[in-house]
Amino acid sequence: MIESARRDLLKQAAAIGIGAIASAGSAFPRTESASGLAGQTSPAPDFFPGFKRSTTRTSGATINFVTAGSGPPLLLLHGYPQTHIEWREVAPQLAKKFTVVAADLRGYGDSSKPPDGENHANYSKRAMAQDQVDLMAGLGFQKFAVVGHDRGGRVAHRMALDHADRVTKLAILDIVPTYKVLHSVTNELATANFHWWFLIQKAPLPETLIGNSAEVWLRSRFERIPPGILSKEAFAEYLRAFTLPGAIHASCEDYRAGATIDLDHDAADLDHKISCPVHILWGQRGAWPKLYDVLEVWRERASNVTGREMPTGHFIAEEKPDMLLEELNQFLS
Image (tube, rainbow, N blue to C red; front, top):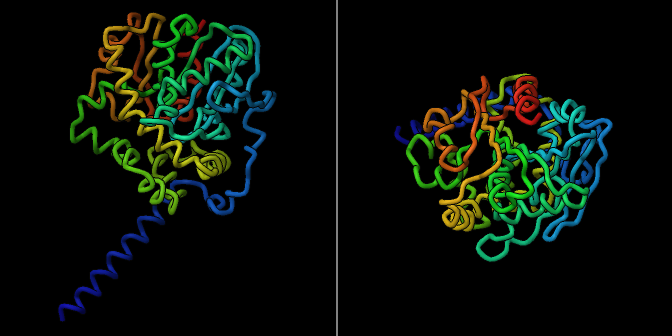
């Protein structure tokens, strides 16, 4: 009798699990499996019509980027688990007023995946920022504005500290400074951002678990985007990039660096504020406004801070591109 009840319980659990997976899948357009995308090495060419696609060798990596437009230089940096195509809805409009450079961070997209380095140093935000400074200098831009979302925002934060003479204006999308986050952990924060503590576990644990279910994991990262926002083509490109050799490990290294060497760098700069104008945008439906006074937190780290809450979740550039354009044009002009 007990064994029969156990079998019935397992059957019910299996049915619930299958139903949950089916439900999650219905929130996104169907796409080719990760195994079917693994052999593809070139990103889809139509996300940035009229943009020039190129790569450049920096002091520590090879960086993939697209560029177009004329006017003051503007660098766009994406978040996790994304690539430069995060900016596909806003970059063409920004290129009417700016020379836009949208780059893949090292370890992401079609940029290279360097070895980890001691204490994850090759994925420190300092190293990742240096790539982008090298990229812009190679294009002839010694001074430029930066817009960074998520991990790109953390790279941009470090860039504005290490290269204050280069960054003219800084817009940061939907983050609170890493040092603040990791020194004020609550149950609510750990629940909302559980992946921070999962990705930093010793290799190859997270890499193996994610790699065995890469598409399921990637869909889970985008599950809070409203239906119809993320197209089949965009998701397929994110999946292609995410499953390139070394990409999952590199993204884990980004987070491992965030919990180790980046904290050391941040601690050394606690009395050093960002000097350029900073504009902070955060999503109303995200975790940050529930846990922090976002503007006040950033005023601890920068001298000239403006910003506002957006009627979005975490992925502002994809959820409300027109509103983001309005904010950026006003701030950067």
